[in-house]
Amino acid sequence: MDRETGREQGRAPASSELLRLVFESAKDYAIFSLDPEGRVTSWNPGAERLLGYAAREIKGHSADVIFVPEERAAGAAEEERRRALSDGRAEDERWQQRKDGSRFWASGLMMPLADRRLGFVKILRDRTDQHRAEEQLREAEQRFRLLATNVPQLVFLARADGSRTWPSPQWIDFTGMSAEASAGFGWLEAVHPDDRAHTLAAWETARAAGEYQAEHRVRRGSDGSYRWHQTRARPIAGSSHHAVLFGDQVDWVGTMTDVHDLRTLHDRQQVLMAELQHRTRNLLAITQAIATQTLRKSASLKDFQLEFENRLRALSRVQMLMSSVDYKDIDLGELLGGELRAHDGNSLEGGRVHFDGPSVALPAAAAQALGLALHELATNAAKHGALSQADGRLDVTWRLEDDDEGRTIVLDWRESCVAMPRLDGTRRYGYGTELIERALPYQLGAKTRLAFKPDGVHCHISVGLGPKVSKA
Amino acid sequence: MTTDPVEMERRLHGKRLLVVEDEYMIALDIAGTLESLGVQVVGPVGSVREALAIVNREEERLDAAVLDINLRGERVYAVADALLARHVPFIFATGYAELLLDKAYMRIPRCEKPIDKRELIRQLATAMDQAH
Image (tube, rainbow over all chains, first blue to last red; front, side):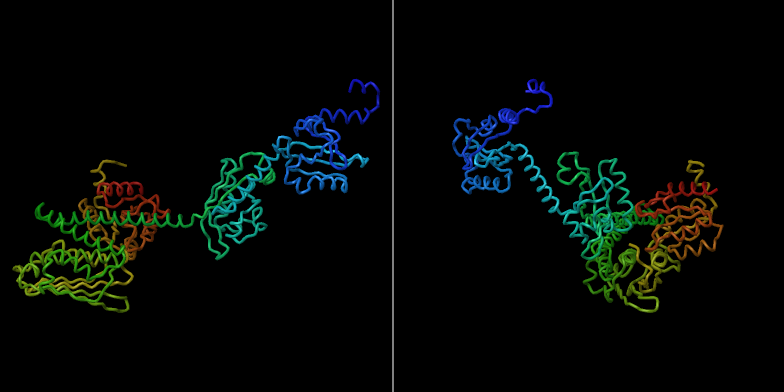
């Protein structure tokens, strides 16, 4: 054509020839004409290829067969012709059917011919692949929306500087902030003021790292309380999708996960761990000190072994009592009962031992020191005193006294009917004596009086329960 | 500076050292260890109030101090500050891990409980060395 027409300058090829050439060579387009009733009057090779009917077999027959049966029954073919006539063109996309019954997604255009008595021309193009791709994209988007709006996290889309372009409904629900108010950097309003600086700064490093991560408190709209959230975001992998889905400007997708309970638990665990370590180390230090002091006052290694083991047992009894009440207050009666039973299980039933007093809650620190002191008194009683002699009697009584300084426990340990070892006028300064006369006043601010009377030991201890004792 | 244990013990001889520890047995233990090296032990005392009273009274006569951190639930930091203000070197004896130690005192030497006596002596000698 070029060669033939090109020589005749300025003259366009006859449009009928152009049309014929297009008609015959447009392989990807089905082009055909129909009379006013829809019967085929011409059928190009593209139509043969696309629809499967040869020109000679379909000419003179209705072209309605290319509609899928359900649409044909609903009058889609007539409707198309009616629309073409009234609007000058009828354009749509729909499934159409080949001769073999297979279907393809067609983009179609029907126009009436200038001479309306001649009918219409229709052009169809197979767009099945594009249609499938679009459907998949739509499904992908639906899946994304489904995920993004139903996961138990606050989801958002943002630009690389951290400005947000889309908040999920969960964000709106949680913060009570509208999508408009959250857009750009509006969302920062819901972040705790102390956390805003690092929240923003993390976006600076995120661009280089390819990942955003920050923990911050986010205000809950319903009650104004702040809850810790972990926020992570990543750039959306450079796909052609994202431009279609979200527009060109969105680059990052992120989630904010409520980690408040986890974090609170973690903090509490750290404090507990530290507290446990402190207690353990302190206990070891006390054990070490007891060993040193016991060693200093022991005549032989055998003495040491016996005394040390007994003291460790007393210490562990108090520890067990303390752990059974979770290092809170300990009942004095229980502490004393445990100590006496450990020395002589029968003495409590025999009527020789009597103890009585109101229920008193001892702070753990006081309980430990008092427990060790009571152990020394009981040990002494079992060795030389009331618990070692058939006629011996032990009365332990205590009462509470309140005054301006607070509450005080006054405890009396009174042994009687005891044949005391011969008193030579000198005081035995044993470990127990030291514990009662020095350690209790030192660490509990207690007032103590220890006397070796002719008929038995008499010990008076008063311990303030005021603000002075609180160490575990 | 020396690392010789004997030299370190010698260095403590005749010095005035404050011991602040609320657990009597432990206080006695530390005091006993120091006294056996010829140290003049001031205290021991078991509360912030008593310790502050001593620091104020002693002024520059203290050569060093050993401080327990938790004294009946009260932190010893007020005593630490008073010692810092008077340039008296001191060390912490503590059951607390680094975790709970106030950041301001991170650089103060520490002996962890239960106390290793040689470590206590080494820390004290080093602290006194560095103060001069």
